[in-house]
Structures are given as structure tokens and as C-alpha cells.
Length: 270
Ligand code: DGL
Image 1 (cartoon, rainbow, N blue to C red):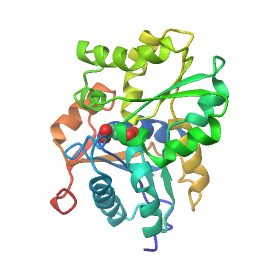
Image 2 (image 1 turned 60 degrees about the vertical axis):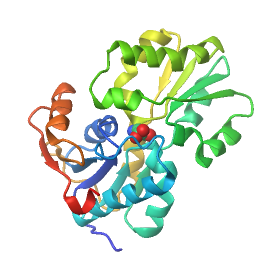
Image 3 (image 1 turned 90 degrees about the vertical axis):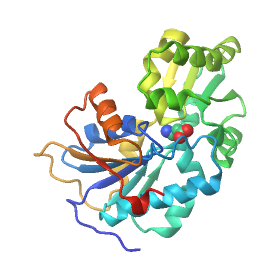
Image 4 (image 1 turned 180 degrees about the vertical axis):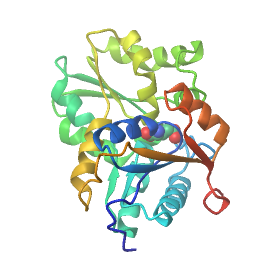
């Protein structure tokens, strides 16, 4: 389907929930003047343990919704949706599509101990994309792949500092630290909201790597049109397949009060 080249068209961003807001934050900083439409698929997440068919159907519905708003580019602010559905979406649409994958390459360049811990969803950890990254960059580095069921849900509920969140984080991080990891890849966009807690557990000598700034740079390169003029502040509209009130609360809690939040139309929500 041909896409609009209107420089003032918005950029579409989606995730299985609120995690992609960590990417949106970087996009809005690096691309002032652009406007964004963000879709949180919180009514259908988590994607981490769902079948690839289910994730493809949802990615298709969300991309279709954003394309119907004539977006000029799509950002899959979700590692899980990216590793499962990006190639199908790229075959279907001609607009620039920026997808995520765990930042294993930068982590391998950074590690001194030659041990890297990757935190991600089960689907991401098991994906051919991650297997590929490990075989390309992992020859001299021990890359520990740690699935983290339950963490996404804690972030969706805004429970960043909750005792259960801490328990899960310790369970997923401590074995990697004991094996000597000095670099942790946040391979799920939800985990960026837990960076402070992760840093507290891991200690100052451990680096955290997450991709949102790299994604913003990649989007700037991929935009077919010149960036929108930056004399207006960036605008964003938010849609969710879950509860608009819950998304509005989450946005307030991360410093985005008074955001425009809407329910995702039923045609894209089943
Ligand atoms: N935020 C998503 C990611 O980056 C996935 C969370 C989930 O749906 O399990 O992979």
C-alpha cells in the first residue's frame, strides 16, 4: 500500500502495552516538531508467551489502524512484535518500518568480563533473530539469555518499586551477575521503566544497554521526508486496547499528565 509523503503526517508507534512509551520518549526528544500516534495493546498483552500467529494478527491490526491515520512511518516499539512480525509488515507496507531487537551488538562491544545478560520475553529469547545475533556477535562472549515472565505485567500496573517486582528482578538478574555479567541488555521495552531498580540490584559496575536512542537515530535516517519544522512542541495522541483511564494514569505517573487518551476502535481491537 503506498504511503503518504506528507512531512506533517504523524509517526505511528505501537507496543503490546506501555513499554514502548520508553521509546516514544526518546523519539520525541530527538525529533522535535514531529507528531506521534501511540498505540498500547494492553488489552491483548503480554505478547511474551503468546503464539506467533496471535502476535502477527495483533501487529497487523495495530499497523492497519496507524496506516489508516496516514502515518509516514511505523515504529515497532516492542522487541517481541518485531522479532515475530516485522518482516511480514515490511512485505505488506511500503512506508519506513523501524523495528527493535535486543541490543546484543553494543553490549558485546561494551563488556569487559565477556559475560552479557539479556533480559527479554520468552518469545524474544527463543526467536531466530536473537539466535542470529548470538551467533554473529557471541563468539568470544558468554551471552546469557534470560526470559522474564511476569515483569511486563508489573510495569503495566505501574508497580516499578513493588516487592514482587523486586523479587522477580532478583530472580532473573542474580544468576547472571553470579556468572560474571557486567552488561545487561534490556531486551523488552517495558524493562526501561525498571532501569533504576535493575541498577540498584546490579550495582554501579554493571552497564545497562537499551535501544531507544539508537531507534530514534535510525528513524531519523529512515524518514522519507525532511523532519517536520521544530518550532512547535511535539504532539502525541494515545490509543489503547485496554483501559484508557489506566493508560492516562500511567502517563501521569511517568510525567505525561493531560495526554489525549482514546479507546482503540473495535475494528482493530478483537
Ligand atoms: N514490550 C514488549 C517487548 O519489547 C513485550 C512485552 C510483552 O508483551 O510481553 O518485547
